[in-house]
Length: 108
Image 1 (tube, one colour):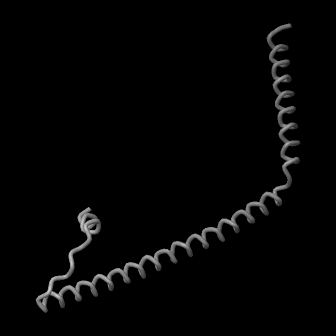
Image 2: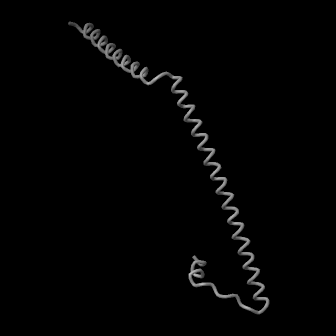
Image 3: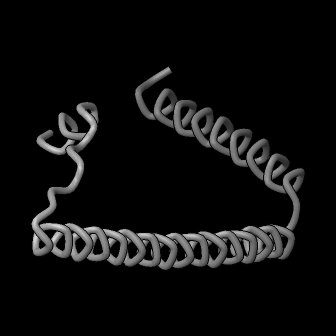
């Protein structure tokens, strides 16, 4: 057997192996289903993700509104306390001292 025969046998063997691999891959692809089913799955997943993103956006928006409202309430309360303290000092009185645990936390 000369080199041409060996080359022909090698080429034939590699073509046979490639054919067997492609046949096996085709069977696997058919077992997975059609492309239409894959698109429907993708559409269903995309719709669920869109709903989840919308829900998360709504939660963030509500949280931001709640944070703004709480910050406004705290601001109003502090202005009231400041006005009350100013009124006490204008009348010659001193407001009561802060509790020690609150005074310590103010400087943190």
